[in-house]
Structure formats: C-alpha cells, structure tokens
Image 1: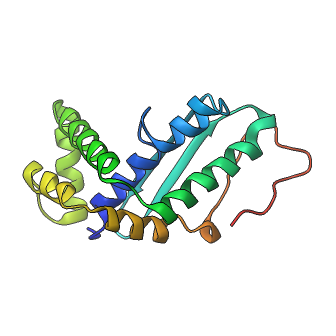
Image 2: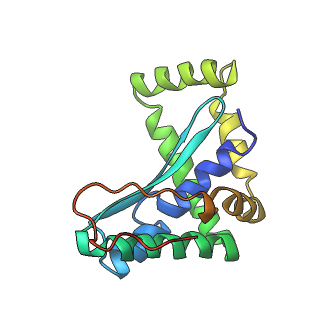
Length: 168
C-alpha cells in the first residue's frame, strides 16, 4: 500500500469525517448551506479518490462548492493544529475498532489486506501508523491531494442556469 494511506484517511476525516469535521461545521452548521456533507476516501491497489459529497438546494450549489474550495485551501495553507489532529486520530482509531467488531467487518478487512498489501495488517500496526502522523505530514499531503487544478465537480439535479464559475 501507499506510504501515505493512513495520513490520507486522517486528512479525509479532518475534512469531512463526521459532525466535528471542518466541512460539516463550516458548511452545514455555521452557514446552513447543506443538508449533509462529508468526505470519503476510496483507496485501491494503485490509486484512489478523495470525494466530497454534499446535498444542498439548487440555489446553494455554487456557494457550497465555493466553501469547499475555501476550506480545502485553508487546510493546505494553515495545516492542522495538534488538538484537532489528536481528536481526529482518536476518532479514526475508534471507528476502525468498531468496524472490526462484526464478522463482515473483519472478513472485509482481511480480504482487502490480502488484495492490497499481500498480507494481514494487524490492528496494532495500523494504530502505530496513525499515531505517527504529524501535522506537517497532513499539511504536505493536503497540498498534494487537494490541488484545485485537479478538482472535478459532478452535480445531480437542477443546476444554476448560468453554469459554474471556474475554480482553482
């Protein structure tokens, strides 16, 4: 697997992994622009995607995308403070452990480990890897993964008649 895979999961969680995430707090709670918003990381053997999903009213689409761009830009410029990083690591490790409580979760992890890593990755290895992630690593990875020049928007439903402005 890619050496940044655990840092990418932490980055995705900081950005949009639950009610304490940056996107949820800024776009849904503070501004009321979306019904829901989250980030999701899909990682595969030789690539992956970091996706942001938002459900909003048609007249708020542009404002939501603007705010997503602002939040990702802020993360790239300012990085993450220790307190937010530690809270996110704790959240991610807790989610991992809860996901492994059921038979399906354990079997799914074992299969993915074999397919993507060629071996079983222990829970202790994952926890240690997550614990080693630094604020600087998150800042560097955010600059790499959140480049607005590589930004793609997919929208379903009624869209603004004048189209979208250019971002990035």
